[in-house]
Length: 405
Ligand SMILES: Cc1ncc(COP(=O)(O)O)c(C=O)c1O
Image (cartoon, rainbow, N blue to C red; front, side, top):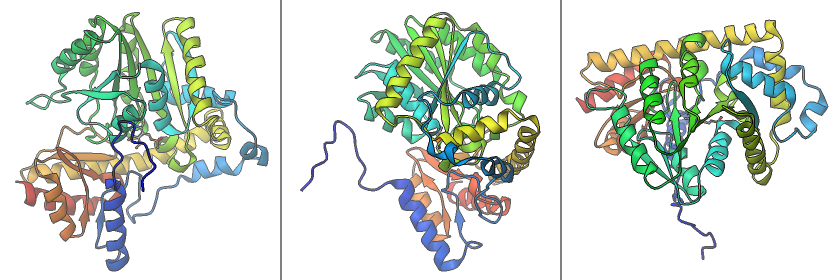
């Protein structure tokens, strides 16, 4: 007998990611971790397949007092945390406008904040066709749906023309559109919008005949490249019209390699104080009525790191080392693929690379016969280069190329 109400959602019988990672774990248990390539994990592992834990972050955790764990945090977060998030997000850029911050349980909570408060039930949320599966899940959960624009045209360039078509279609039936863009180091492709891409987004959005809430999901920003370069798009947002509100989905999960601490924040960059205040009230309401307040100890850790120059420098330096390791894996994977005649979906940096395929399940099955575990998506195969060494990147890229070319 079933009791669950589907409510227009499609609740899968089995989670695809957990299923494939379960098979990878079983293979590792049977054959050892050196033989198996487990490219399914969305977390950074070192070259020995151990989870990267930053000692500088652990040092900050070591400074916590019992009350930092035990006490409730304010709904929007403790003041030091709200300061820290702005420092982490904007770095040397001084945002023009009114900034408001609300704590979330990771970057996932930011998606919930945006969807619950900036769309109506039944609305369509606009995003790129390649996207993190949870975008659809969170839209469905709230009685909304996803509409997608083509991320890349035939030449592999950012498809701003299709963005315009899709945004105009929605503007004809909704007074407001939530547009979600995941950059830099997008999941699952690894693409980062260039500053020229951003100019196009801004032109398209400015020309829209409806209000637009532009949600920039920056979950991977600290692993996407040099801190100032990956933030160089921020001043461009000043060119957005008054009919546009900017939100950022910030996640400490990747930044601090501390996924389990469930720490993130939605950041609003508004043109007016009223819009910022409206944001604080609305997302605060959602927080209270879903997860309530967030993990206080994680907020205190963020506060300690970003208020202490020496500690922040230590964290940044340690992260830089791991970021460079990840960037090198990406370069090696991409070049091995290309040398073997296969081109991935446009890739810049980040945790994942995706290879287009019209038979992803079949290809993944054949890879599994070689003890290589990747995730089959609707139109391609996602490889987590975050979780495999560069030697395994070469092995995996060659095996994929052999099956695809
Ligand atoms: C594109 C994207 N956005 C946001 C998140 C949120 O991550 P978390 O809730 O773990 O901070 C993820 C995590 O995988 C992601 O891939």
